[in-house]
Length: 192
Image (cartoon, rainbow, N blue to C red; front, side):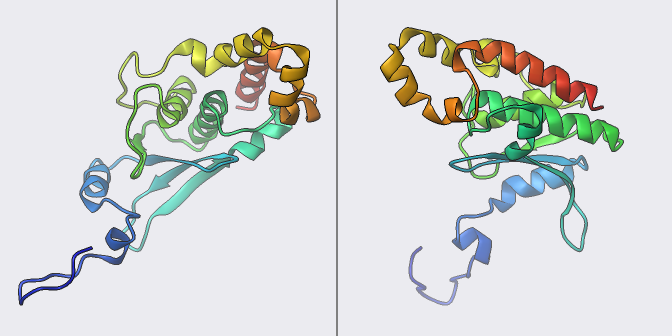
């Protein structure tokens, strides 16, 4: 940030200085009057929340962490299939809570076609919630983890065990990624 110079200097909001909130984008999302699907990615997990604006402060309607997918036998990582399933689970729970629609809130993340945020949005939309979304924003094969499965099949056994050691430790076979994806998605939809 530039140093204060002259009498016309105005101090920006704290969250703007910290580069935590884009108030112009937030105002547009709040004006829509719809709940926001907030998607955040860390190194190890994906967090999806349905948040509603209230004058006293935002109210979190529901929150789904990708770690909750472990009860469906999914080895949680912060990848595209995990983001989709986390969004799908949030959509199923949101529909159960009586929500019908949402808008996507990706925060300060750059919107990239095929990105993790859009995978979570597609998951929530496939669960039955309405949202404004482009048709080819996410590749269906990448969402199902076909690219991970093909990569795992290309590797020799030594490389395979090295690259996918965390998955193998949890009893998750990356060579059957799409089958496992479909079974977890079906298990989530049965919870509705």
